[in-house]
Each structure stands twice: as C-alpha cells, then as structure tokens.
Amino acid sequence: MCPTIILGIESSCDDTAAAVVRDGTVLSNIITNQSVHKAYGGVVPELASRAHQQNIIPVVAQALKHANVTKNEISAVAFTQGPGLLGPLLVGSSFAKAFALGLNIPLIEVHHMQGHILAHFIKEADLNESNQAPSFPFLCLTVSGGHTQIVLVKDYFDMEILGETTDDAAGEAFDKVAKILGLPYPGGPLVDQYAQRGNSTAFHFPIPEIAGLNFSFSGLKTSFLYFIRDHIKKDSLFIENNKEDICASIQHTIITILMQKLKKAARQTGINDIAIAGGVSANSELRKVLLAESEILGWRIHIPKLEYCTDNAAMIAIAGHYKFLKKYFAQQKTAPSARLKL
Ligand code: KG4
Ligand code: ZN
Image (cartoon, rainbow, N blue to C red):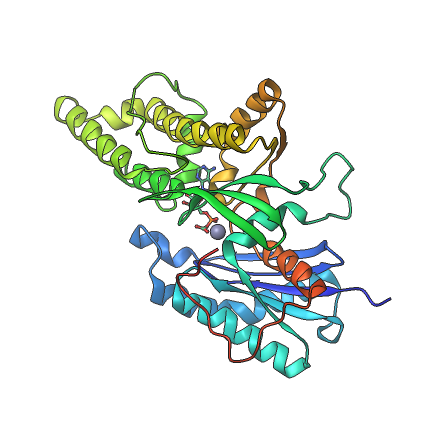
C-alpha cells in the first residue's frame, strides 16, 4: 500500500514552519523564526505577514528536501486554519490551497490548538517504546501565548474544554512579567532560564481564587507590576540585584496556579493520563513538577519533546495525517479564521 505522506504548514503567528510526516512518522520539521519583531517588544502582524511571504517557499522546499520526498509523493497538504493572526494565517492557507490545487491532492484544515495536543502522536523513527502516545481519554493542559485550557481529549477530533483562562494566557503572563523586567520578547524562555538559578520562595505573589477549572492571570500581572514599582522606589537596582529570585518566584506562582487546576481536573474526572502541550509546556519547572506529581498521584504523564512544545508544523502534519485517514478534507473556498473555537 502507498504510504500516507502529509505536508504540514504552520503560520499562525511569527514562525513560518513546514514539516513532512510519513504514516505518522516525522521526516522533517523546519521552522524559521522572525527576528524582525525583536525591536518592537512583540509580534507586529503586518511585518509577520510579509516575513511569512518571504519564508514560505524556501521553508517548504527545505522540508521536502530534508524528508527526501518529492512534491508528487505528497498525499495531502494540511495547514493551520486558526486561531492566530489573520494576515499570517492567510499566507499559509493561500500557499496550501495553491499547492493542493496544483498537485490535485486533498487540502486539510487544522485547528492550531488541536495540533498542539495531537503533537503527542508524532512518531519518530529513532524513538523507543517508552515514549508512548497517550491513550484516550486523557487530560491535556494546553498552555501557549494565546491559550490556557484544560482539555478532555476523548478522541483525535473529539475534545471538550473543561476549563480555560478568563483573561490572559499563561504564556502571556510570562511574556508580560518579562517585559516589566525589561527582558526582550518572547520573555517566557528567559524567565525560565533566570529562574533556574533563583530561589522560588524569595517573594510571594497571590494565587487567584477562580471558580471551577478556569484560570485568571491578569490580577497576578497587576500585582507583579506594583511589586516591582514599589521595590524600585526604594532601590533603583532592585531588578538587577534580584532578577533570578524574582523570576523563580513568579514562575513558581504561575506553575502552582496551573498545577492546582490540573490536579482538580484529574480528581473530578478520575482520569490519570495527563498531558501538557503548547509553548509553556517547554517550561522546565512545569515539566519537573509534573514528573514529581505523577509519582505521588500515580499519573501516566505525557510531556512533549521541546521542539514540539512551541509552534511547529509537525503538529499540523500529524493532525493532518489523522484527518486524512478519516477523509476530513477541506474545500478550496475555505478561509482562515483568527478566532476559531476548539
Ligand atoms: O505555542 P506557542 O509557541 O505559540 C502560541 O501558540 O502562542 O507558545 C508561545 C508562548 C510564549 O508566550 C512563550 O513565552 C512561551 O510560550 N514559552 C515559555 C517557555 N517557552 C516558550 N514560557 C515559559 N517557559 C518556557 N520555557
Ligand atoms: Zn501555538
């Protein structure tokens, strides 16, 4: 039988990415980060769209080359339909549509957050048995720059949001804290790095009391802003002299908030298969705490490899693979959507 070879395209924010997956095994996973945004302290949508236009053809060419696959061998092309920035999404979707039309192959839409979750099903040629995909149903804490959700994953495309943030996302909280500390965008990975050398109990920040399985991070951001402002009034070098302890303490608070709700969701559903996904799942403390809790609570945990935490196209290609098997194809008239529900 012919193998199923999917080309995945991801362009929802500031990374132009393309990947090739054959029968669920990743053959290539190429990402071009856009450095143009660094000077602005955040992603500038118009600049992102223009950079995607410049990057998309070379990134796809590289993905095919690394995979040692020709265009004519591709079974279908999968692209991120949303949510994300509309201009960047339009570049990826237009490319995918033209590619599918030109080769007369199916076109597949993928929800970006479903992609993050389905990244757990990416197979690698050299991976051993211990790295098994989660079995259904499982809970996934999906934490990125735009989302913070606890998702009950019943099947590949049957997902229910049990709780989500009512304001900022966890990644946004990391990035805003970093900005207050004068760190460049995106600050999450830098806060993580400084935190590794700091004392997480040096400073205390409030844990919000939010009903059910929902989250809130905007109050924490405000109290962090006041905390820094008040200390700087007394000591202008407060940040410089305490950066590692500040990062460790605020990171510890964010991870505690996430873990409290994840534990509550596991208790309420009785589900012990627990996964994390999205950019913040790269956080070293979240990964460590999850591992420690799994031993206490008897969870089977699923932590993605670092390259599948932040935005990538292998996650879009694997979601495309499972949609291809179910023949969930899109039409040429499909359009991307900046706000797409899970
Ligand atoms: O999934 P992602 O790449 O893009 C979105 O879909 O939003 O997530 C990006 C987010 C950013 O907010 C970034 O600061 C955060 O993930 N992030 C981290 C770490 N690595 C990325 N936050 C904390 N610790 C990290 N190591
Ligand atoms: Zn993402």
